[in-house]
Length: 204
Image (cartoon, rainbow, N blue to C red; front, side, top):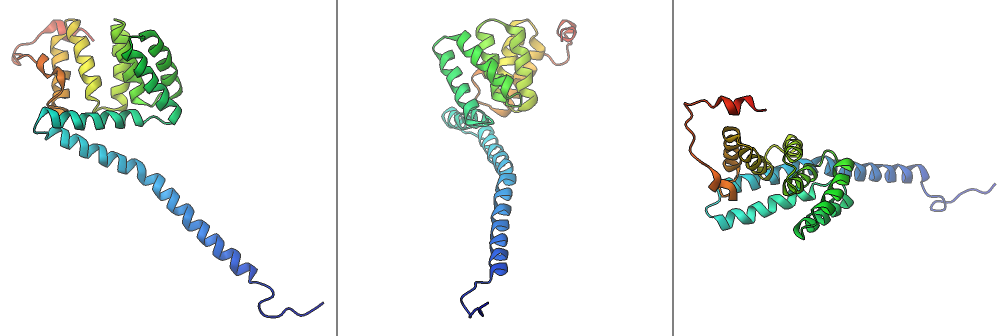
């Protein structure tokens, strides 16, 4: 056995320890980024809603609204779900309502916690005049995203179309409180708060 000279044999234990520490630091940074990402997204969304509420003009509000909508769509859990949702929206825009609904059926089955999947399917069902099914999907969307003014206004439209004016107006007012320039604001009508309408209250 020969004697090792200085520089011939590296400090293996020390080298691996340094590598382990570096890897641990990198892993910690990745975990921190993953944990903070949802918080940052929420902060961005909160800022957009605050800007929307304070918008000085309809043009300004429309630009902010578009950002919020993109955020809702991009909240899809995977790129594939995002792409399917956008494809369904394209089909809906070209009046292929059934094709859009079939795609969105798969979206909500594969991503039940994705609010925009439910909202988009609700819109298609509304266009197909399947109002009760649309309301059910809108409720799912609002349970997941309580500030979804699009789902609120859609629900208000259906309820008012069913003659449930008081409840529809209540929900529409909640949407306008979030988005003062929402298109459906013109559907607001004055309601006498002191007078009850039992027929509305009896309907679920």
